[in-house]
Length: 262
Ligand SMILES: C[S@@+](CC[C@H](N)C(=O)[O-])C[C@H]1O[C@@H](n2cnc3c(N)ncnc32)[C@H](O)[C@@H]1O
Image 1 (cartoon, rainbow, N blue to C red):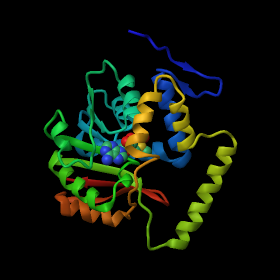
Image 2 (image 1 turned 90 degrees about the vertical axis):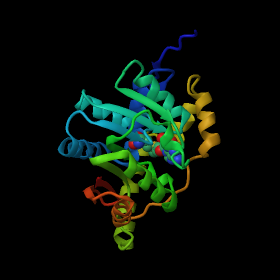
Image 3 (image 1 turned 30 degrees about the vertical axis):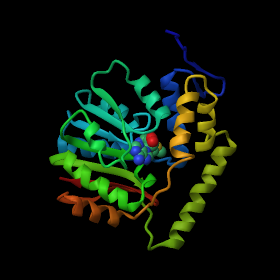
């Protein structure tokens, strides 16, 4: 077997199989878009603890590199997590990061495939958690997904979705907020922050990630198209899907964390 050693280059960017460096680099890239990203994870885990306790069985939906799983296990060492995603490069980072950790499993699946739940190793979950992912789906397939998720969450369990959920009734407020946020992003970019395209260019040029990155571009292109409906669309659709209660438990000017209780 060829051993690939990890390195971190002078710019602090990830390379090779240094999975922690890739995690850190992914986090910085995502935080360029969402400086409050960690805050939403903190509230998400507060609500996990509040509703289902400190040893939950979790489904990390559209897990990417396993961001939620990492924070979950740091805070609740008795938790278990199954990560589901379709991206071979992000899953390679996730699998490398958690190799040997028996609390964690990963499944490659397309959430638009009507049969995807059949690939899961467990029956029902205490919590299904997802972030910055379901806006890759249009409203109709997301409605179908919410129905499937209602069947995966045990009674008394939760689904939480943190994502872009702008309020469509306030276009002038939205435009002002967006301009302000993008000005800060432009300043960070001028200081060397990596955006989505820069980050994927790094992965594509890396000897370890080049092959799965090529495959992920065949699957998605840059990324899939989808919708960003407002909070009340999510809460209504979740209740219609079979959840008993649903509301936002955290909000920013453009995003929200919606919690649905089964
Ligand atoms: C921006 S990333 C977010 C990853 C992670 N949740 C985080 O917060 O860092 C969006 C993720 O959604 C996944 N995704 C989007 N559509 C999907 C689908 N139809 N099936 C499986 N995963 C999907 C992508 O592969 C990607 O990993």
